[in-house]
Image (cartoon, one colour):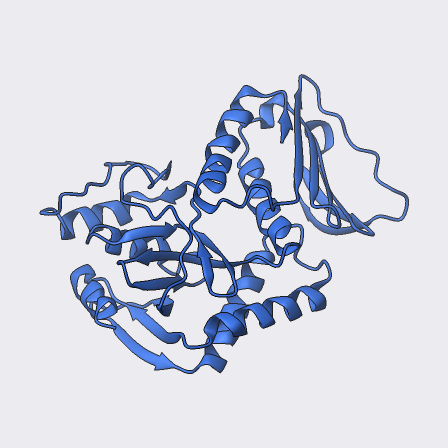
Length: 309
């Protein structure tokens, strides 16, 4: 990564350092990022015939062959090469603190590793010394709160948002997660007697969970692997039901495609990419128990239910 911004360098390398230290995969990634901040915006000249894919006030995304352009008018531009997994951004200093940089960093890591046949699950995950539990679901399905539920009960964190795997080898990975005050309040009140603690927050905040909880640092080849597909429902009680690998594969693919729809790579070589993902997920699901979870608001009951299998 190259940048002239101290803030961007500090913020992105905090997450990139976790990736390097906890996965041992930095030599395998194949992505390059260049973020330049200027006093004045520099609109990028779009290629003739570029097609507009989306539009919002002040910005638009265009595509031309293997390139994507985020045109932001006088605020600058982002150019992404989907073949090479490279990103170039030249933005007005007023956009320096945009979350855009962390988003590009995350997806560059994911797509760079896919080129090396190392795939990702949009999942939080924990390890208790013998069993790995993966909590899968779309944004807002309760992955982070369920992760915290297990961490507060002494489990090791493997990943807080995305876990990488190669066949049945899992690589720990962590980026800072966004915690909301209601999640923290609910968990603090449910587990006040625990030795672990959660910081009090009054607005959504990025938190690095690694220094707070015990974290798995070495790759794992678990003897027991369970996948939990999370749903939040309007009830105090929680329910769990076992599902077969075929349904589990469909839910994993749905989660992957939902995540990719939020990125510049959503439609690039989609059939080819999904084919590779299906093969990798099918292999991971072999001898894996799959459950669909309907998570209620009673945190203690939810933990006992998920920890019982």
